[in-house]
View 1 (cartoon, rainbow, N blue to C red):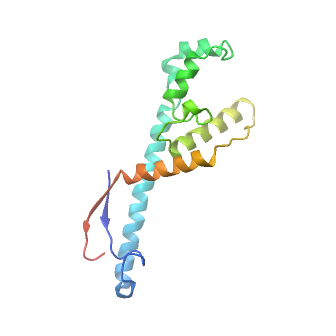
View 2 (view 1 turned 135 degrees about the vertical axis):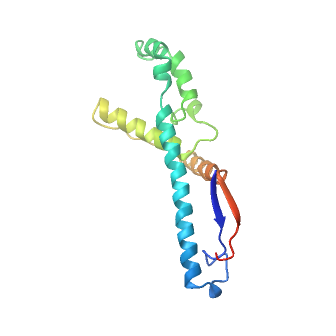
Length: 157
């Protein structure tokens, strides 16, 4: 969980800004910068975790992968499951998780760029629908919100 302190003086929309001293504004700003750092560190950890599990089944089920691969994916037993157990196959409907998020989008981008550049030296056009991107955005907001615990007020902030 990400613990932050409540701050009553960091924003003109949530305080009587005419009564906030320079020192209070400085303290609130430093607190806010620290809170943003914690939030970004959470996302950085999510990306590292995502990298660790990317296409894990290419190794754990190499035999199934190879069976589909050697048919040019005319056989798709492994591939059909692969889209369900990996969150980044956002071009196929059955590969889109209900709680798709921007980490999944980044995983897709990295997967496509690295595969394209490494295999052919180019990357084909990548397009996601605005609806999918909005859903990923909103789910990412909710993911972060679910991690935040707001501690009680501090009288100086």
